[in-house]
Structure formats: structure tokens, C-alpha cells
Image (cartoon, rainbow, N blue to C red):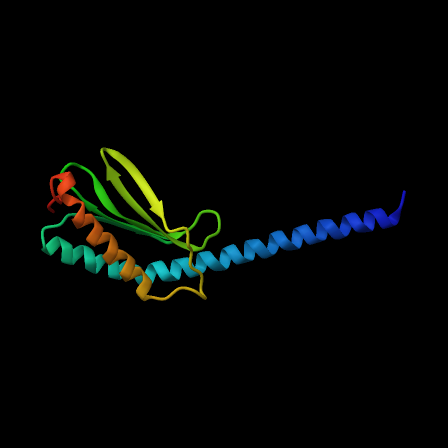
Length: 148
């Protein structure tokens, strides 16, 4: 039996352990960042919900530590909106469009994600406005928007 062989195995095991620990630390940092960003974006979403309510548009909104959902509801029971928060795999901030079409629920994503280096506060409001505009554009297909 060669000590060189087991020294090599020990190095591989140590390297693997260090990579795993670094990945866990990165994920923890990203989840903390996500919680911070969601807490900053939640009041913006609440303001948009209130302003739309004042205009006779029913909105479902929910926020959790690492994710929020904002949906405009349609008269036929459908919806159009977004979810925003930490991705399950990478913990990077991601946006998902959520909507119904012909009675089926769908999601779409841009495929991109944000971290502390790439995130800018105005991104959330821009994405939210785009989803609201899209929801209103497609409202006629769903017999109009639901009212509060």
C-alpha cells in the first residue's frame, strides 16, 4: 500500500469538501441578499397593488422572505404577473413571468439572474411595470380584468 496514493485521495476529499463549503457560503450570502432586496421591493409592489385597486383592477400579491408574487386577475379566472426571488438552485435573484392561456398556467423566464454586483433597485419596478402592461394588453382575451 502506498502512502502517496492515500495522500492523493486525502487531497481530493479535502478539495471537494472545501468546494462544497464555499458553495454553501455563497448560497447563504445570496439568500441574505435576496431577503434584503425582497424587503425593499415589497413596499413598491404594495403601492402598485393599491394604485391598481383604486383603478378597479384586482391584484393578488404575496411576499415571503426570499420571494414575492404579483398577479393581475382576469374575469375568467386567469391571471398575468410575475414571481421574483431567489432561484431554488443558484439562489440568484430571478424573475418569472406567470400567466394563464386557454385555461393552462404557464411560466416564462429570461434565463438571467442577478446578484449583488448586477442588481439595481430600478430593475424590479421596470419588470413590474412591463408585466402590468402585458396583463392589460391580454385582458380582452380573458373578458377583462377582475375587479376588487
